Image 1 (cartoon, rainbow, N blue to C red):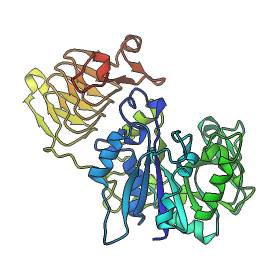
Image 2 (cartoon, rainbow, N blue to C red):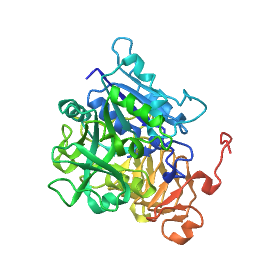
Image 3 (cartoon, one colour):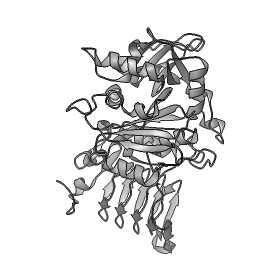
Length: 418
């Protein structure tokens, strides 16, 4: 489908992930030992055959743009394929993007060069695998003006956090409500409802006209979900595409329907912990549908010391260990370790996520922690064993996950702004 343009919304601030988003945007969040969140949507698009992609950035975009330049350069003068970051340029005045719809409205000029028949508008902060080509084919086959990717979930869950879609027996959208107390059931399946995944396929003309209509409204939040989806079904042919109807090539049946919104500390932590199970529902080892990211320019991971008599054994179980990391006489279990991490002797790390460049001091003990990039954990410290004590020193999530940053230990260098 060379007449399709993909627009990836990657300007999210990620306030609910703070302080992990103090120095990076939400799409640039580290995930799974070697990836950024944006790698999932880009991998899905490229694997699906869509290689004309614009990535709209805004909040703290430096690390994201650097990541795109190093790992996702597709620009070619021979074939019309590209993955290009688009900075917020204030094209319509001195305002940043005011919502997801406004982000596209301020960048309508991106459509001028390619003049696509359809536009894919996808978010960049969810973890999943999807053959987007199947959704695009469905969009065209049924003659929809707009197709919304949808996920069936239990109705009790839907009322807490999702925009819910009401559909008829043929899959046409008849209503859309945000976090309703009584979510609309799926026809023939009264215990579940369809929720929006925040991914859309638009006829280009429909997209332009709906954005123009939205910007002319006096009362609007400039958001696709809140302002366009809630009423567009009354004016256009809107279809719901069931995400669970497909499996990517090479995926097992157990992977069907895996999709995670990692917008909070707890959901982000849980999604990382999903990966260390024996048979995770998100398969990062499927060569038929790879998740691509930047390869670290460093050596392989290493485990050293085997002094069992003194309990000084470098070991890892039920864990992911990134390139360049050295487990030097410490022990990790059920932990996701990124690149260039060092875990020193007699330390113990369990059920945790260690970002790139973390060093765990000798004899330190960590449990249910997320440790931000470049943090040096002092020798002998315990974190994650006394929640009340942890709250006095660190950020602790509702679910009891401790977030540790350099600022918590007063660790600074000459390059810090403040």
